[in-house]
Image (cartoon, rainbow, N blue to C red; front, side):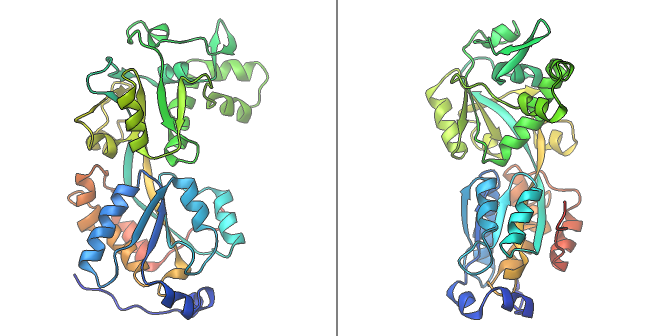
Length: 346
């Protein structure tokens, strides 16, 4: 595999001094724990196939990675931020305020959010968003009124569910997975149960009602996990009645200890996500600091390699690990090649 000659643009030189660039010749990446295994695979292959050092890839969560990304430009800041959600407008502004004005958004493919439990544990094999909402929300509708969540067992919600104490380990608020979980499961369940209508009819404005829909209970039945999926897995190993929220790829690499539930009657697989049938899926991204291209060696080459057909295509190693290939991958490749940046207002 051939490498590309690096050129140092005048724009990049004004953002990062030549002295600073010389101090670091290794691409630095941080962010989403969901994107971490994909980025690690790419980094290792990049180091083996290019005349650049293997990039350093760290986790920490989408929000934490984007915060580091937006600290500024220079060799003491990261080059790439992984994210399991799209960058927020306030983060784009924070970047701009710190001098990170040109950001390249790269969509690598799609992933699913799954509900998994101990392989030999209770029969958690089928859910709908309404049941997850009723189990984990801080308040639920009872006789047309919103009340503090009274449910203690899954069978309290649906007699067909196991008579087991409710216990769920969900991603903490700094994880991109949490946002997808809130919007596509809790908010959907809030609508499906009629809770959102009850709150709106009671005089709440829409924004406040949606926020209330996504508020989880605080009585130790819904536990935030701030670490990565390995911590969630450890909690399930120690709690036979526990349910964890994972990315599909992590589950698929732990089928020896976990089983997965359907959502809305659809099993989470790469095929059902690619077809748009599985309801809890999301795009995955990484963000590149354009000012570092041509200054920190290998930044653009790493980005192009990441979304190449051989890596992110349907027959590439990322697909084998669980990534659902983006049908618009060719457009992404062109965008990276042309170094197109996102708009300053999203």
